[in-house]
Length: 213
Image (cartoon, rainbow, N blue to C red; front, side, top):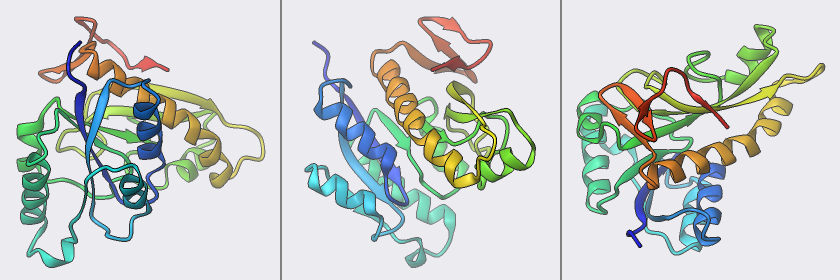
């Protein structure tokens, strides 16, 4: 049996997607080992969940660094010490420097609460409602230097209901985010999903559009 995929997870807040990954790992549903949870905020609630699960944690405050590039370089130097095969951005609220991303091309993914390429950045639920969208959702994409702009592996769609506000929409989407992220990490761990150049391949075939979960 192959060794579990070594995963580092980056968070900035409560870490609900992290908790989904931890639960799936402990249940044997994901062939991974979460080797590090890192955050830019020492008070991030997700760090406490990682500690409770016996996972190594790292809190690195950007306020102590002279600029973003040097912060990112130090953060990724420390992440590399744990030798992850895959880095998962799960609510990590910082834009990363292109120079630190380059060595990790194809080995770093992000979960984003919109149907990319719609609504990169923040306030995605409010923006979807203001646009009158009938469908909303979440996407998992490979990370590039472009904000929320890397090739999308898969997405999960959710109907917008009459009377939805941003909070209700976010709450209904969250379980789908968890399932989507776990599915995508599982595909990567099995070697079924890969980034080759700038194109996502699944089971050896280039994808013309994102998979639906």
